[in-house]
Length: 194
Image 1 (tube, rainbow, N blue to C red):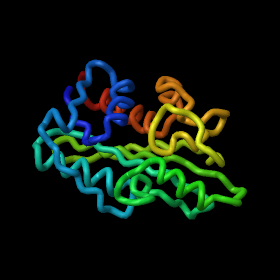
Image 2: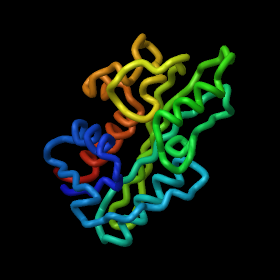
Image 3: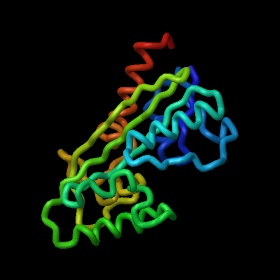
């Protein structure tokens, strides 16, 4: 089985490829010669995942999946949420985004947060959504060199290390993306002979 993963983020693609069984071949946007920016204009994480998957499916006539992820912080009324990648501006600068979050949480005791990933799978114009959530907390400082995005300031529940301190294998045991991807894999195994 071949599926296109509708992302331009090489870190996401690497994480996903490590989770997907070998008998499911993941093609990238560059494999289908898609270089344009895929629209993400919806007001929800679910909406953005769906918009991206249908855009690639319809324009390139391929079965595909897309994901969208947001960091939702309780004390910030769920922000940055759907704006996570562009929280500090359109440059999608991870350090600027983290700095903005840390500044907004300065002096705030409630550090509860969660990462939420939604995957939209579109096969033959039919969509199925898969959700993964991991709860945790926001630190006061950045710690760790691995991962990407907000990983250096997020500690998942049950751990004393940030996502940026965990190896990709350790992160894939608990991450929001891994949870959603595992639901996707289970669905594909149940509905398609591989």
